Image 1 (cartoon, helix red, strand yellow):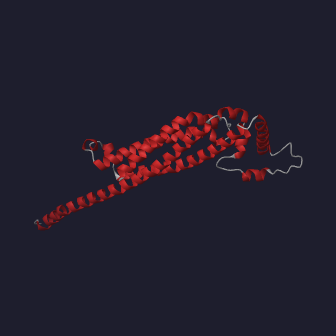
Image 2 (cartoon, helix red, strand yellow):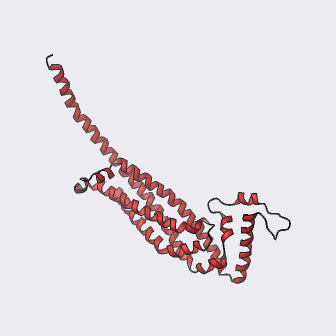
Image 3 (cartoon, one colour):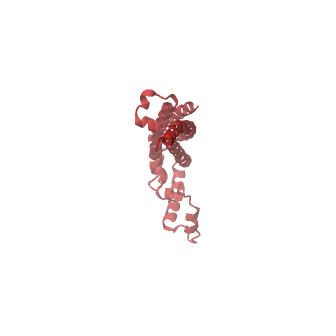
Amino acid sequence: NNVYASSFALVMSVVAWCLGIAAFGKVAEAFGSMGSGTILRDSAFRAVIHLSFSMILNIVSFMAICCSTFHFEQAMKFDVVHTLTSSAAFCVLRIAAFTTFLVQLACSSLMLVGMSSVLTLDFICHMGSTVQFHAQEVIWEIGNFTLTGRDPFDPFHTGNLGETKAADTRFVSVASMMQHLSLERFCPYSEDVGAQLFIFWSSGIASLVSQALMAIALNGEKERISVHEEHEEARGVAGMVPLVQSAVNSAVSSPR
C-alpha cells in the first residue's frame, strides 16, 4: 500500500534527521580538524542539509498521498491541494525523491570514506607520540611532494608527480588531504569519535532507504491517479457524444 510505504519512509527520514543532528557536532569537529584541503571538511554540514531537505520532501509527499488516497473533501476545495494530488505533481515528486536518493547515495559513500579515514587516524593517535611524530613526517613529505613535485629527502628523485596525480582519487583527493593534515590538531578531536561516526553514517543509510521507499510509493500513487484521470477523461468524452449527435441532428432536420 502506498500509504504504508510513504508513512514508513517518513518515519525513517525523521529518525535519520534526528540521528544526524545528534552526531553532527562531534563528526563536524573531526572532519574540520583534518584541514581545509579535504572535501570532508564541510561534508557533515552538507549531509545535514540534505537530510533536512529529504525529510521536508517526504512530509509533503506523505501529505499528498494521504489526500489523494482518502480524498479529504475539505482539503480538496483548495486549488493547491487539488494540484498536489494530480498525476503530474506525483511525477515531479517522484523525480525529486529519486534525485535525493542518488544524492544520498553519494553522501553515504563519502561518509564511509570519511569514517574510514578518521578511524585510521584515530588509531595512529592512540599509538603514542613517537608513532604520531613519524606518521606526521610521512604526511608532510607526501603533502610537500604533491604540492611542489620535489622531495628534499630523495636525492635520486625517484618520485614522479605526473604519476602521483594520475593515481590520486577524484572522489576524495588524498593529495589535498595530506597537504593540510596535522595530527597535532586532529588528535584532540578524535576521542570517542568512532561511535558518533557510525551513528552519522547510519543516519545516511536510513535516509537512503527512506527515499527509495518514498520514490516507490509516489510511483505507485502516480500510476493509480493516472488511471483515474484517464477514466474521467474518457467519461467526459463519452458524455459529449450525445450532445454532438443532438446538435448534428438538429442542424440536419432544421429547414433551410
